[in-house]
Length: 70
Image (cartoon, rainbow, N blue to C red; front, side, top):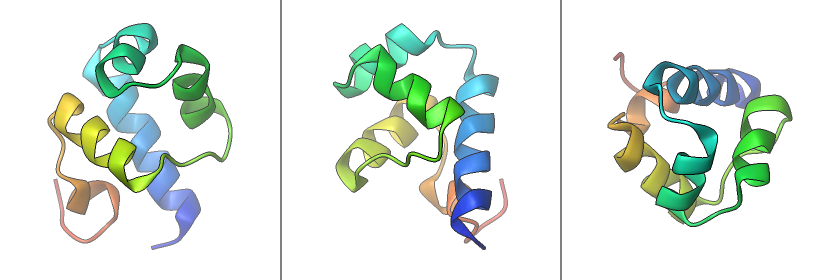
């Protein structure tokens, strides 16, 4: 799996969560602009932020990373 595929899965999980970007940002300790960059640009969160994001979205990191199926 390539980085672009991982980023696309992350975008899909954020969009499917139904949680507003500002609430995601608050929940993981980043700015709303940073979450917007995850959605619109080829930006991937730091590992600690990625772990928080997976927990907040209730998504397994293995799925986003392409290691396991949803």
